[in-house]
Image (cartoon, rainbow, N blue to C red):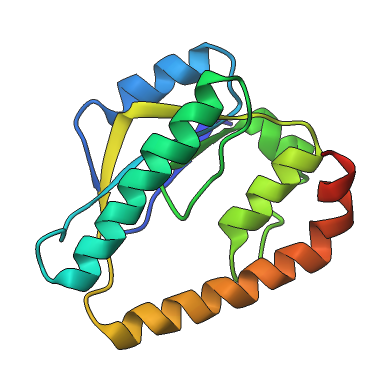
Length: 160
């Protein structure tokens, strides 16, 4: 079995230094690592531009500060690494809710697995360009968040 797995969507574009950069963070002891998600289609329209701004905010004001103070970051969508050890501890990939990324993050938190952040591991992800796509995606996320809250809510509050 390999040391770790990196999850991407089929249409992601990965920076040429991605693997070497995320590997440095992995070698520093993190078993789960999220990376910097940028957009492929920032300039398509105001919707994709809005998503791009959100991803920048997520990186600069959520993941970066959490990582710097030694707190846990969050896995968001795609572009993350987890070790074979974590996969074994989880009994395989058992995250199947609508927001499996958030489910995985919640599972890491309740099991005291810190999620690291690697700002130099950059990849590019395509964002919605229509209002209908955006609303549909956000409804799916909202349902998924509620599923995660139902499954992990009590345990998450207990670790606060």
